[in-house]
Amino acid sequence: MTLLWCGPFKVEVDDSVLALAGDRCLHRSFITEGAADFCLKRVATHSPGARPLKAQHSSDGCVALKGNTLEAHLPDTLYPAELALRVLYQVALARAGAVLAHSAGIAVGEQAVVALGLSGAGKTTFSTLAVEYGGARLLSDEICALFPDGRVYGTPFRSDGQCTPTPEVAQLKSILVLRKEPFERIEPVNTSTVLPALLTQTYRPFVAEELSATEAFGRLSATAAQVGVRAFAFRKHPAAGRFIADWVRNG
Image (tube, rainbow, N blue to C red; front, side):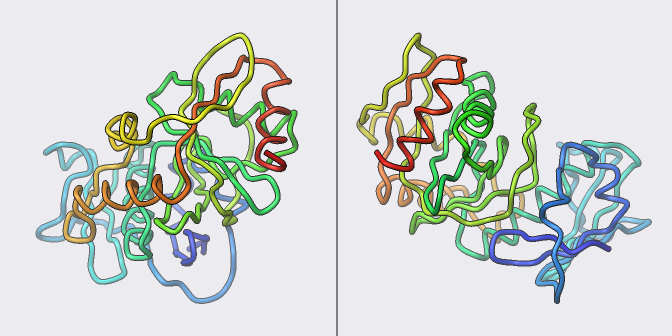
């Protein structure tokens, strides 16, 4: 078993699950010591009432939540292992008061920005440029944990980038909507006009008893109200990484 940071909590994960997840979960920098708050345990047979990870196909793996322990019955394949890890993080962070969002987050000093958007919006490009050319630290280029008070935590999950995520916490300066343009600029947007699209980027609560979809949306709405939403127009160029890191630092 390996102990990992999960927001403010520590979670114990079966080593075989981490091995199966491979580089879809860059967990090395999340390893810690101490007592676990939650546990992901791989089991040989699924428990009565276990929920399939994908649709109704239990052959793709299933999980059962028992208190603070998530029991996972998994095939020896990558994606079920990654999905089980995501469920563990969802449950733990939901209990901490957060919501998980499909997003890329970077930190500069004690502040951070998080970019939400569909696949192809440029989240990985944005975060990679900020890290490689702006001196930012990557929280994640796939999933960030957002709190209504503006705190944001990194997670070990990755998309296509090569930078290593970190488990640290930072204070959100803004939520960003990305735009691909031939120059860099930051401009305010009307939160109410973009919030419906942002809400689609929250992860559907796998265990609805822990966090309903309505509550998840409410938490993201509160975060957006707390820190504001801005548009970041940028190009795939080192200058974009320097621009956004400087804005977080000084803007």
